[in-house]
Image 1 (cartoon, one colour):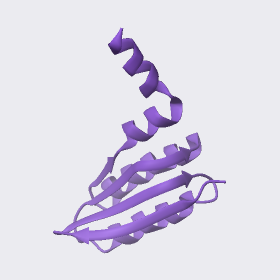
Image 2 (cartoon, one colour):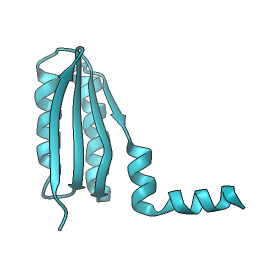
Image 3 (cartoon, rainbow, N blue to C red):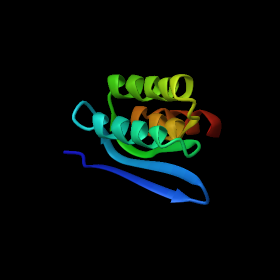
Image 4 (spheres, rainbow, N blue to C red):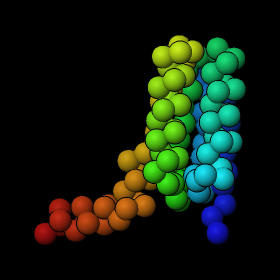
Length: 104
């Protein structure tokens, strides 16, 4: 159905996890494990880019936000989640409705 890709890049001291495809019950544990692994290394902040996610369920979204909070509060590792608005608008169709209402 939907593929899942989770890639870690480290450029200019920034650690970025780029996620694409479906973030669901079957795949979310891989993303959370990568987030915890990077945070445990204590090498600075983590960026999680979900702008390429084609599907996510509500539990996966809740777990992503919860993991962000745990890593920041308990491990002192800042986490920046990027692209959530883009993914949400694309998945819900609100982007089309919003564009249409602004054009009118």
